[in-house]
Length: 253
Image (cartoon, rainbow, N blue to C red; front, side):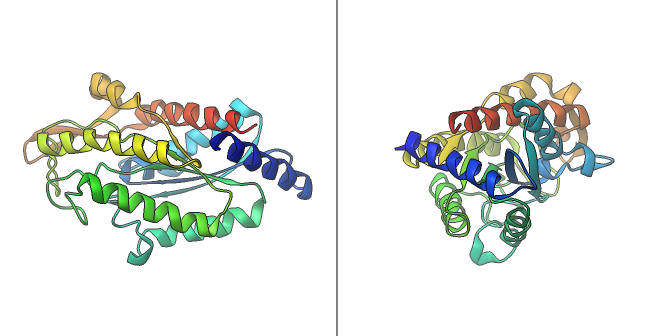
């Protein structure tokens, strides 16, 4: 069934492209996430945030025009993106409207949330249990399906942060363990839903090994911590995301 849905989605993409002389083959992307997606601490996040780089990579890899929107927001949790909260999901609704005005092709949603959900305290709703994490993601996905019946979803695993991470929010070892456990939830969702795919899982270990080079060193209440990719790190993360996105698009060709 997932294969059938994929074929139908790409048929819609091709038909949409033919109905729209403005575009040939088009890939529409909306990135949902937190400060990492937003490009926090970057000097010019409009040029260096992971979604910006990932969109360019996807376009080059697939030889497609790419429309994208970055709905990342610093501090965001899955709770913040619940439609009924009328907070960050408003960004998603606006992005959908803008993309639909440009292309009839299906929209692919790349979602990386969970970093702030895993905190011991601080971000909205934290700490979020596995059960609520799944429920929140499925509520968001369900509403997007209503707005975009042909939508495709890619769940990207949240990346590593140091076990002493403690800024305004407290993460520490317990938070990191909680976030690692979210991976099983992402796998469950992908296995249970034909329009949902598991995206990147490898960036977590990569940043764990290379954090001193590819993440900002930040002063915290428990010493220097590593949480946000720097500009070079964003390029690395973007490539992981882009590879996952391209893999899904190719499955739908």
